[in-house]
Length: 112
Image: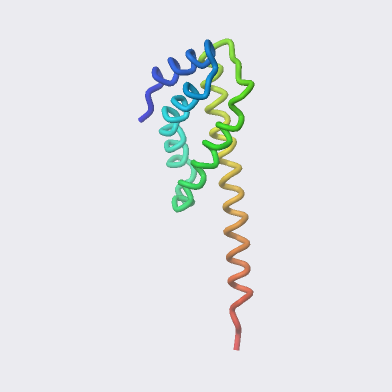
């Protein structure tokens, strides 16, 4: 389970003094939120959860610069929305790749 109070405190710290160390702590604290979303919405892609999670974390990290919110609630809401959006995109990407692999493997089957 995630600790919302810890995430809020870190978000407040980040709003006051944005730096990479604080954002790293936010990322660590928010990993359980990603895991909950994976478990709720992406059970059929369980074998890809690590890849999906890493993709989301990478997107959050890349987009950290320029984050400036007036409240910790807005920062948390933004992070939650980004998790949701990027998990969806990662799932769509995996589904597309998986479907392509299945079609290619079917093409290689020889019928006698």
